[in-house]
Image (tube, rainbow, N blue to C red; front, side, top):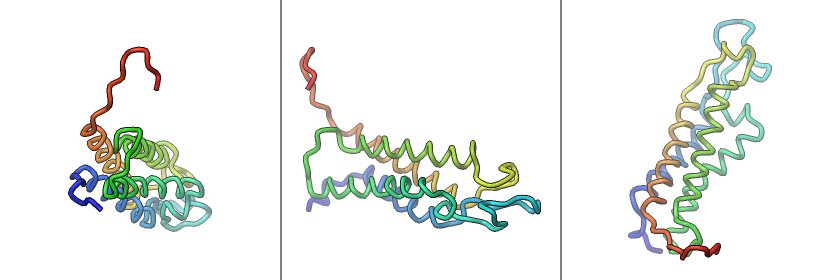
Length: 152
């Protein structure tokens, strides 16, 4: 174990993963006072874990990515790509999923009568932290230069 290899960017990304994982269980969507506003057939506030069947697992995997990066760095494993690059891509994907399901295609009927809860905002914050930490770590890593014409 080499804890001295951890930088602040990995800690930021890992914090984002923890925030994202916890936020999935907090209230993400809340119906308004309109009696016709329902989410999943109920008139109560729901978490992202309760309402999203497939996305819950994708976001849970996204939350685990920076923790896996920390493990890789602590164990000083060799990778064939710059450390943090995959975490940044996963963070960007999580941002897209959370944004789409909170802003563009909000669950519930009518979608204009469904408001966002603290869980959604924390999920977005966690995804942004994952992306930012991964991108910063990726920028710190040097890429091996290849001569022109070499594909591998």
